Amino acid sequence: MIAQRIYECIAMMAIGDGFLCAVRPKRHTGLWLNGPAWWQTMWRPVVDRPMLTRALGLVGIGFGYWLASREWRQAERFSPKGIGRQIASNAKAWQESSMPSASAL
Image (tube, rainbow, N blue to C red; front, top):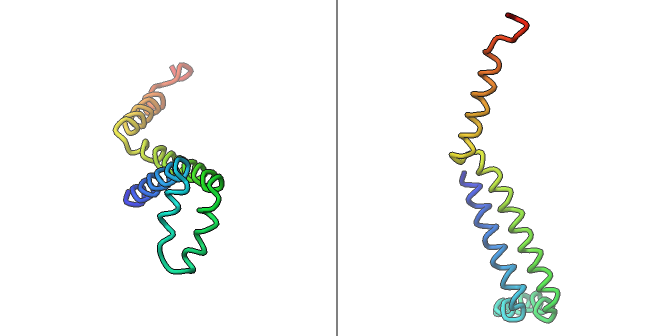
């Protein structure tokens, strides 16, 4: 359960970061220019190419949504509604297996 929460947090951060990159690419990536020279050298190409930053932002949104949707599917198994469906399915299967068939009568 803790791993699912961690994945959900990563998904939220990826979606938020991707949105900021898509909407305001120069401002968002420009915030990362503070630091040592090697750090600035690493971030400069991203800051100078806003369309690349937007594209990477959209990829981040897609990745975050994909990660979150995986967790939603897993969480449905443990939700009250999901457990209720499983109990109803098991009860129906049990009733069908415990009823005598027409050929046995």
